[in-house]
Length: 415
Image (cartoon, rainbow, N blue to C red; front, side):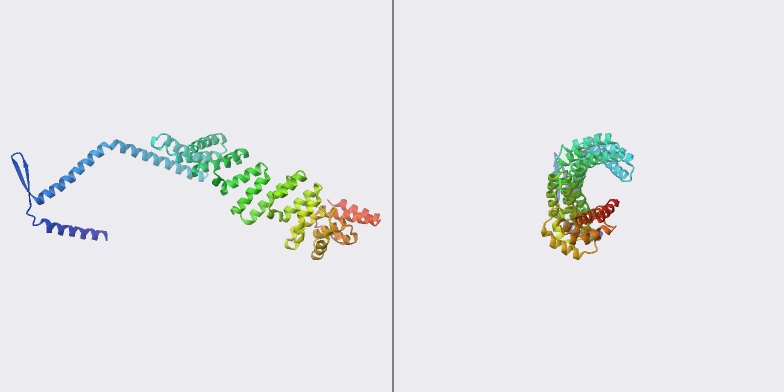
């Protein structure tokens, strides 16, 4: 189609030329001294056109000769730039293929080409990327000394420009990741602190911050960071729930006295406090610190909605409640009686019910659930031991020393 159009235009130009120049009687006279030259207008126009075209060719030829060294230099710089980029691509391919020594050599070759080319001296991205790739390859082969030297070079280069660029952010994130792989959490935190606020909220930065907090046993900070990651959907729902629960348990276990335990509980959010495993662990720790009232307060919301929990969660809440029954109030009795009727065949629940009744001195009501819990060999050993010991107390209250001794023997026989 394009050829047809050009052919039509050519015919049109020929037609116009024939109509305008075919009967042109114009004359051009040129005078030089005593000489006179007469030319037809058509010949003059044709000569002017050819002369102008020839003059343009001469000018272009002279310009090409004058600019030949500059163009040759630019061509050599382009070839070296292509060679540098080719070496960088080769380094990336070798790195992804697991040939880290070859990748390091290719990245160093790219750096050498750039260093020997003045036109590439200002290409900071190429230098930093090649340096990081070489350092990453050394990290893979556990050459930490040379890796750290290259990382320092990359960080020094990035500080000369705006810290918002991706290559600068990548250098710090990689440095923090390598520091964590080496177990150097303070170094990782220092590099992460240099990131801009927007970059520090990215998923990768939060993952590194979480690892650093876990390594330094900053459980509250780790839990807060994990919440942000879960909010950003960095983990599947089940994995996020398990991670948050694990970090909350670590925060509770790190408490060494009652005040620390209260601060740890206050640091949890509502979702953590509604977790049966977390609340049960906190209540057990509270029992160990003589804080039974706090433990009961933390368990009460879960005890009142026990029907919403699964069997394992009910067992955790019940066994924890059995540990914090000292001085329990009468306001617990209505819910305890309702739970006893709802779950008559769950030994953990019956153990808690028996412990509550025994704590209130309701020995007649406590006997049956305690016997059911003590007889269930599938129940936790500590809970069964507590049930037997409570039954021994009950027997002593009734002056039945033989029954009390038997209950004590049963408790002692549990591993």
